[in-house]
Length: 465
Ligand SMILES: [Zn+2]
Image (cartoon, rainbow, N blue to C red; front, side, top):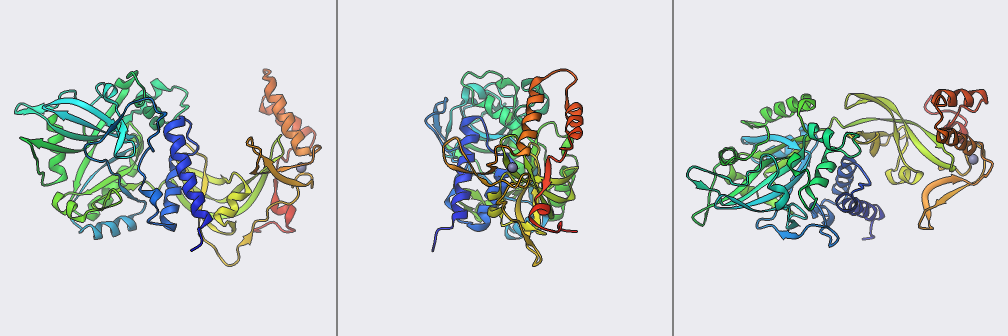
């Protein structure tokens, strides 16, 4: 079979994003975009090896010492809709479920011997992580000594590390990073600075008593044991059947703004541990557990048009005009596309139904086409500048190659001039010359149309009417 270039591109994007996220401190995309890419790859190639990579690829450049997990840390498959949840629940036996909030943080494991925390390791790739013991000793909710009057705890505890919104505002008052990335940054520091601002929520344990593994009957029993040992537990409850889990999800989705930290869904586990173990796993993802993520960050709508924006560099950027749709409480009517290659990659045409996402930290973005009606109209790639009619070509990247962005070659392109004037005036930073003055200037010279519809240029009729 021929290699599918779409798959290569998806894989590369995912790996690049992973690397940027964990090592550069400068993520190249939002979490939601990343999830969407994984979704696409899963749709095209469910068995792709890239999907089995969990967390950070371990790099020699990282500051902290590497450490190996005694018990590998897996991850969970996810669903986004009630129908998908119902299908999973059916396959998982249809029994009682243990449900909890899904914190949007970073997971790690702590190892205890006779009550004492001896080592904490970030998840890393699930097998090899970073030794974060010095930091973990200062986390809220993670006891340095864990036990009951009967004795100290021996075993492993897995937990999520989060930065509450309150502490986020103290650490990062300008909100330059989101709480997840800010928390990860603190957790990855070498000398524990600000680690006391991080909170841990335990979600799983393996316990050994007298050299023998302790058998728990249910997830609920495990949670009770964790609480008795002194660990912080995330809000959770038992759901006797599927309907109760759906109700729990809906209640959490409605009240998510009242949770004092970022959550992105709920976690559901088959409560009965014997059943859960019997279900087994696929590529480190237990079949008896699932993350049900909020889909309020996504909605279906129709692509009604494309506008091209032009700036001082001559770059021609397509912007999707959408049938207005409510997304996470706001009305969305346009979405970024980045460049014309993106339109080709998505196989996007006017009239298509599209799935749009808008996470906490990004502008709306089309991530896939959900329906391609027969009357769809292709979106032409401009062969001339929609502002001046000049010739266009791909702009050269800093690496010296033809990039994905189209640019107008006409040095006298009026759109470039407008962009330059706007930039220059803004750069003056003179009191009183703000947007109002700029707008008045642009209006005075009748060049207010900084956005121009490509449809009106390359087609005779606007579409749709
Ligand atoms: Zn031009």
